[in-house]
Picture 1 (cartoon, protein in one colour):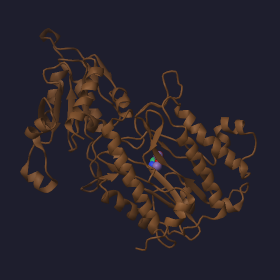
Picture 2 (tube, helix red, strand yellow):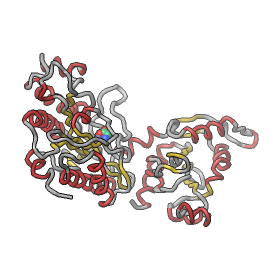
Picture 3 (tube, protein in one colour):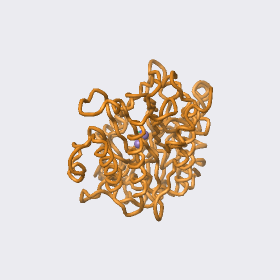
Picture 4 (cartoon, protein in one colour):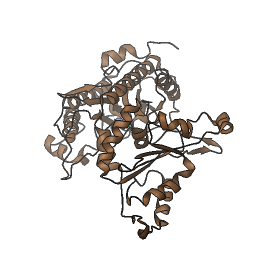
Length: 438
Ligand code: GLY
Ligand code: MN
Ligand code: MN
């Protein structure tokens, strides 16, 4: 993304701030163990508005000031840089990131307190990073304005998130291009994982294969921890140990996506380890696939988010009734989640963007389901999960867990499936699985 794009976003936000001051931090560095850190990833809002990806950074926006955009960064330090990597530094950051002023991050407290004197209405999102929250709250507690010298008293603290999240929910052309590229790359990686799968391999080997292709195609990270779940492990929704051996006759569920330039993809595919669905697997798979297609077909501007879920759920419930796994009246079952939650315990969709479960409201102020708008991106991911040892379920279905997930862009007249290149038809899958020997 170019700096013009970040500048345009700031301009839009500045109008919403209505003269108030906003503060954002890059995410803190997190310890993994001893002196090893987790790979650093900046916070989504901070990156969305600055385009700056280094650690230990902050931004202050004060629209009506002579310096509306102040950026705080790690200062140059040749010795530290030799060990830890290059830093842009204070001087270069100013022109590269189009800031009105840049400072060393160590100066943040001092500058923030000085600016509070000019404006006591603060926008800051509490709850993301406890260390930074504590610092901001301490600075506010210790703020002692001198009104006789013209200092503003502290007036209000509001969350910044409600101003930024509607912006992030409507994707620009540039964001859509990036998400399309990332989604297609992740779709291809899923296919590559299918190609090498065969009985006897281990979940972590398939995990290694799919993650290789994410990175190979340009993703710089995972959007979330990959779920590679063989057999009954697929009935654990957030399974992530990925250590078991894949058995002949079992299905393999992979829920994984790469992250490119801080934008997520989120794809799930389920396929037979040996390349052939059993009749029972085929029956459940077809229900999930039909449900997913019905929900995708429903996506267009003006449709309620809930209607997309209902489109999928109706097909799932009808299908499960057809197999005798659910009994009763369709409308009654549909209207009472507890009646089908045993097989379908999660929702059909979530917003997708910089965060895999992206920001953005799901209900309007009257508590009605929100309507889809052009530029929204959502997942469609129905599933059926049947753990073993359920006496009221025929044994042939025990241990089956199936989810199919695509990433869908709402377009002016309908939708675009950003992950359409990822195989999901039964015949395609059966032709691909196991077709490449490693
Ligand atoms: N991979 C997380 C989800 O599908 O929501
Ligand atoms: Mn998802
Ligand atoms: Mn997923």
